[in-house]
Image (cartoon, rainbow, N blue to C red):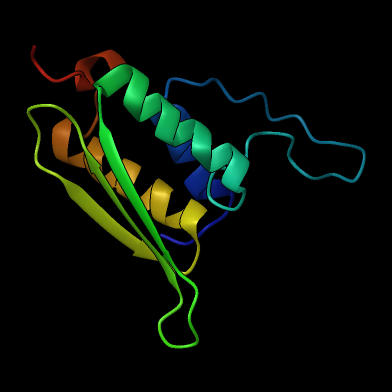
Length: 116
């Protein structure tokens, strides 16, 4: 899935956020832009750490050949998920949604908690 409103909505829903549908004066949605803003994407990393005790590794390649980002999330007791993208925010969102799909495709955030 590409970066944008659809990706942001899926991430927000998986994190348990209720979207308001509000827009700013320019008509741009005022919801978090998880897939395009590194500040908003970092909230996803924090959510994984807080709610799932997840380890994360984020590698950003800035060279001329193969620029982009690789993100790995591994929650306690779960297999690691890895995602790649042209940008770090998009790779973070892809890894997060891959984890959600692997653990509990239609579960609420509490159901995604690994057993302790």
